[in-house]
Image (cartoon, rainbow, N blue to C red; front, side):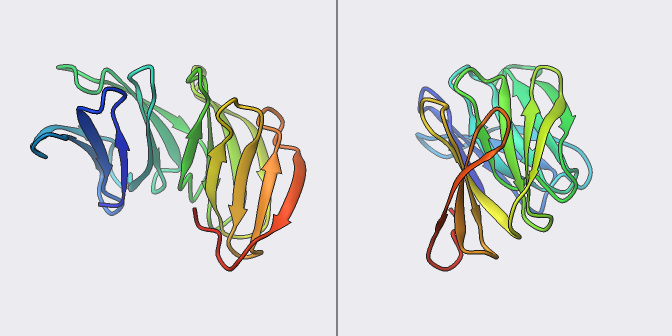
Length: 175
């Protein structure tokens, strides 16, 4: 188990098992498992965002994909895979409207923007090595990405991935 994301109502928590192939969902009240959602061979799910829309968005680093799981608690969740970036994405950020996701690829140092509706990568930006940390400003105005190799934090335009600013950080800005 590696990453967690709480459902919008706080009743469930999704868990990505980084060495596995599935996302598991548990009740927060008693931690009983209520759902196992398979993402496929070699998935290695890592980053998870349980969006306010109810959809669950997961990175699958082993497949180089982003998955959208609609109705994750329903009898037959709808799972859609979008190819994103080889060796990633590791962590994710998702837009407030749920239409875009951004992911980091540690080994290549890339950050990508994925159109979740079309299932395509719209933008790529090569940054310093070991890009891992990623966060979107609450109002969607800035994307923040950390480079562990360079000990830097980058501020990017979320639409174009243009670098707007960069800041020195302490050692290894993982999160």
